[in-house]
Length: 225
Length: 225
DNA sequence: TAGTTTTTGTGATATATTTCACAAAAGCTA
DNA sequence: TAGCTTTTGTGAAATATATCACAAAAACTA
Image (cartoon, rainbow over all chains, first blue to last red; front, side, top):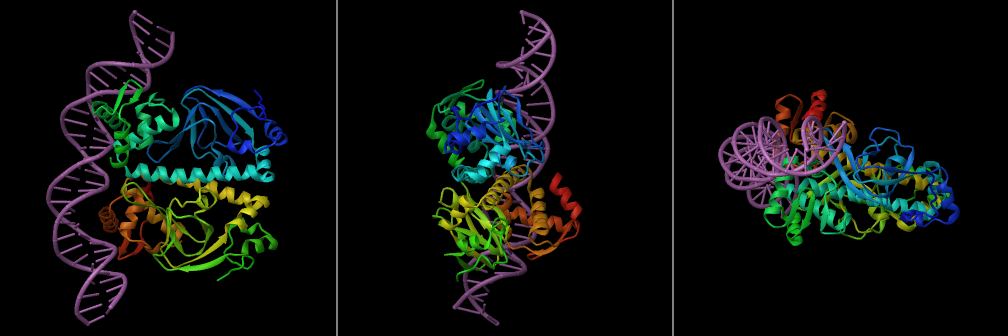
């Protein structure tokens, strides 16, 4: 299904800087595709030919590490996916998989690149996004490696509540084993820690449903372990 | 000391795309400063006003994590320092400290930004650099968190030999405690592991001098622990 | 050179977390 | 609904690494 950027209601910050003419340029040869939960959108090791834009839904960025799969982060639409490899070295350095049904727009790279070179506001917004991403990656890494499991799980719960679902009641979009891959802990440790939080009255959780009962405690655990 | 980009022998890939006129633009208002080993070049939390370019020497990028200082990576000239904060959010998100005597060029941000907007080849090179940095950060993180101490230390030794000093005999530019901050391990673990590698005939080391005796073993340890 | 500070080496102990193993629960699917 | 697969819960044992403690060595510095 071809799609028109001019009328798209999920424009990125960069795309918002563009006039109608440039938006038409960007629209030519692009396609919108739906993915189901679990579908792979970008696959590590494969050639990246299109700029990928997540219009709606949730996805996980994950990388095959030396010993096991690691989830780098969970991203929420709207945002670009895998920009550094599409622009950069062309071979995807990580995979991206839908964790909810998503709508993805594949944008012609040549059109995108032309805009990057000819439209300074657009290119500057992309530069800012790349800057943010690098800093985010560094900060996340320092956090994850220094905190222990309790703190990291508290973080993940807070991130889901504050940034992803914007509610203190939500349904985990991933399994406990995936949370393990997100915070570098075993599946069993996730289970135990979640049970502990429940027992301590910090969260209420059954199945995949989580309700935050004591956000202050979570924050404290996130900061002090 | 003011400095002329036109005659600079340490040009970045991006700067190499520029003609004389643009190089003159970049040169106006810039300054070259020498730092001694241990001097702070960029300080986390402070306002970033200039583009910082490492002309010669070695520096460590480090971030104050939730529990202790963490070294993100060690960088070798020539390269830009702290680009994502200078361009991006302006408040330095990490510190950079000289670990050998270095020569640093402070470039006027407005001149740099003007080039970024007006000179497409230059801006594209900067974009590529930002892409590489983000991917590098993600890869490093997956590696460090998944491997255990032996593997990480093997990695560090190999990186020093292959990328920093380009020799199998070198002098560690950092203390064991700093290596600990680089691989998320205690100072004591570094000492013990280095001693173990020595005992096993994989490296020869006394004081800060390291000589790699069995690179194959190091590689194997880096891959399998 | 003497005196001070920083860095390193190494044992003993403590501990967070993994791993293994199996049962129970939940989610699919035919 | 029955039967299969995946996910989750939880105990017990194993383990990598941190922490503590102190001595020795090396690196400064006055």
